Length: 249
Image (cartoon, helix red, strand yellow):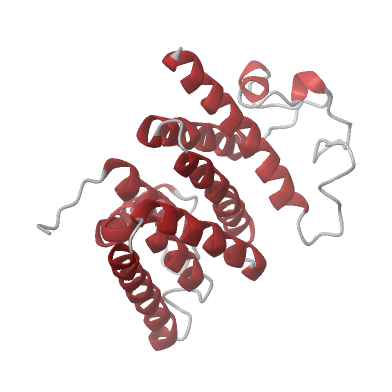
């Protein structure tokens, strides 16, 4: 029964990942995410059910459009895999509790922000506001006391201030302003694990940045713009779901 539930949460997460990717692709373009069938970005052919099964369609068709054979970016499948894994991890960590439901709901605007930032290196303010609201509800339900919430808010404001100062002092060259509200919401979720989440974020970002510089076409060159929100999300969620910290507190 537990394995079946785990699989169900993974499938639900993969479906939500696919849907969130669709919303992020159509957001602010004039296209409605509520209506209109999906199309291939290359040949504009309408996609049918065999093309829209999360993860499996991409794998079965070897990452290509079934109609024209053009390549479909692996990022589409990665969105689905990642959110599926996070839904599964959330179920394993929180169990079948109301806190799990809020955690999963909080992941949806966060996933939209990550995907949109990867596509456009922009963090939509509306999505950040929604994410913070869900993260605040999650924090209140988890902490359950005024003292615990005060500690969480202290971590959240401290984290947000850190990223705002990075933005202000570098005049936007080191960090974008949109990272500040996202870091605030993530710190609300992570609570006392925020310091570890901050450290993990920079570790992950550093490793990925080095790999991008090493393997990009034309050889390593500085000056490329890499969105930091995906690293923030990865670091803070890792700290939250593992509760591992290098800090002795």
